[in-house]
Amino acid sequence: PERAAESLESKYKKVYVACPSFIKTGGPELLHQLVYWLNHYFGNAVIAYLDYGEEKRAKVPFSHPEFFHYVCGSAELFEEIEDSPENVLVVPEGWSLTCTKVKNMKQMFWWLSVDNFIASVTYGGQDDQENTKKVLNMLENVIDLHLVQSEYAGDYIRKNGFPDDRIEYLSDYINQTYLDNADTALECPKEDIVLYNPKKGFDFVEKVMKVSPDLQWRAIEKMTTIQVGELMRKAKVYIDFGNHPGKDRIPREAAVSGCIVITGRKGSAAYFEDVPIPEKYKIAEEEGSAEKVAHVIRQSIKDYDTLIHDFDDYRARILSEKERFIKDAIRIFGK
Image 1 (spheres, helix red, strand yellow):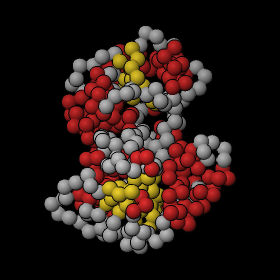
Image 2: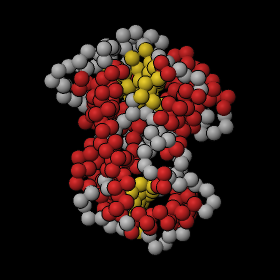
Image 3: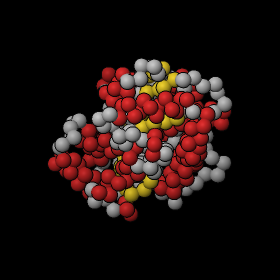
Image 4: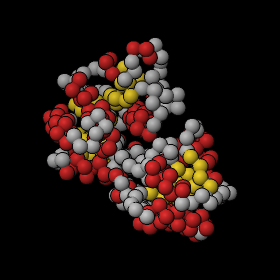
């Protein structure tokens, strides 16, 4: 990554950001984005790839092709990092046991998702509170600072006893493709299309689809980032039910692309700080609510030109997230 015109001074000799290899989801992209901006201002960040496997060892780089431009040559295998007191390791929430593999360097734990953390320490179970508590106690002993991507995550760890002076807000921002097209998204010709993510909350979405066969449904799947953006700029509505394990990207990508966004009330969607949309567009998944969602969708399509402005504040906030992310990263890692 190109260095900033005026380089800043970091608190650390090196910042290692642990990241699973070969995966293209919002979490790994954010880990790569952090490395990009730390190198832009400090020149001292390295992505440290995990879970590459012996059979993948010959494949370099270990990042997904769409993420390589963030890190270029600033990448190592996790086993090659320098465990020195002058360095710091950033560990994403799904890899808590990684924190036990270093002894000398400082560590930050980045809560990109509450639900994924719970699943990772309970092997997918939701009721193993004893094991979750053991991991939280381990983190209490080895983590110097907790970074939270959402208010949902901040609330969760505060309730589990982590004090405010060990918590810093470091969220994220959406892919640049969506930001580049945001200014003209509302001017694009719109069709009466309703978008959904088939990998998320589909049991409930299917109920909505059954009571609204008149609607034109399109799944977001098997597409590149550019293809998803093009589809979102055509659609009028995006719905997002099921778990919101962190401050999810797809609702924000849809909103800046000119979609009316309708969500449930699980996870981060329950927090206005994370999903700041009017309450009438947040509908709990309960008996009879599929019909209510279908009604809101039809109304959104019918009165789209008026109702899309209910999301003006949400879009403005999304467009400001990149600048805040950069400022927060400089504050946390700089002197």
